Image (tube, rainbow, N blue to C red; front, side, top):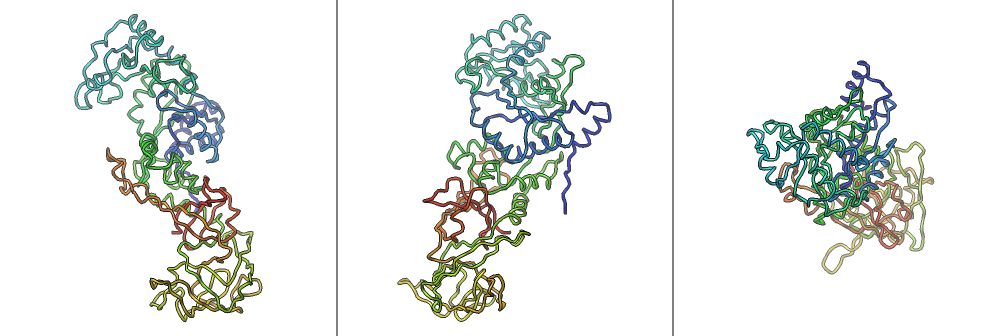
Length: 547
């Protein structure tokens, strides 16, 4: 069944157009902060903005809201662009909030000149104390009623580097009794001299806060619809207050609209919290395949199609909910089933010796790459006297409902012959060393693609002498708690078994595997080649189980 885009913003935009808003004035933006990699939650915002632009033939600005030199780095710009492009979207223009620092400074002076902003000499902890809580009136700063002239003078001194970090801030003068904490004289500018900005270097020692920068950048760029997730809903009054106080007549006024934030079970979707995982070496970087970052999902084997299908499936709405990770896994499994080559890999090998098969003989048998592929392509796999099967696929004494190999019983080898187990040899400790079998040389047709006899059970296998030794990474949920974000000490709920590494034996075709290719290791799961793989150590990451 085809899934339709469930998009509440189609109706909003259609209504605006019907009310006379010029279609050629529609302009969207995606405004990430360059302080980390994008995660799956950002993919929802990317999808929404770019899809709306695509539908209405409008443009999208990729704007980096780079207002915090302490956390931001140039490398994050590169990876954010890479992730958006990988998802299949292309922006029309790249901008930076740091491009507007002079304009933002001048707009802040406009607010001061209206008597609606002031320089506060108090320390930030004191300001925070005075703001109180939503159920208790805040306390006004003793510097709140400074004259406009003094505030302009002090703000200029802040800009020129006269003060040190933490000496003072510029605050908007709104309402210290407002139940909306964002309106209790929010900070517009703070001093940061000890850290250079990755773009402007040491040109500035005062930096605008996100709330001041975000809306004013929308205003400067003539953004028509500012779409953001619901965590910014309480910031909307502040967004509108700032715009109202700087807006000139006949200029376009950006409008903020909210949609539900993507919350994914067993994950944290916050760059600040993900950064903790990276900095504490809990994961191996932002693109660790256990991370819910777009780069991490890509390295794990997820595809752009599966992520976009996932977002379409959950829909765009205003309803707050947590999405079960099984829906994301269903989305990738659905796509990988169509595009993955079926290959054979044995993780826990048990040696099979075919007694009636010549020692030096090797047959190259036909194996179908993917039954879902209408092109029906095949590859050649080697068959020899010595094979590996999974140790769990053999029982010395047959049990009821055990449909695999046991003494005196027959099974079919995938894409190959029917095999019968006759005897075993043991190691010194009594464990099974090898299984001696015979094969039915007439059980495979001349094409090698159909059977002359029907057998209930089919096992995957690899030829021992041709087997490629590989390393496989098997991932589990990174947290054991379903909603770790609801706990302040979310780090206490880490799954310490989220990564397991095993050695395995693969069919020789995987020797030429590339990172772009996707594979189904038959009866095991879906896998992809890891970027750290090389000729000496071939590494595959498990994307998802078969079901």
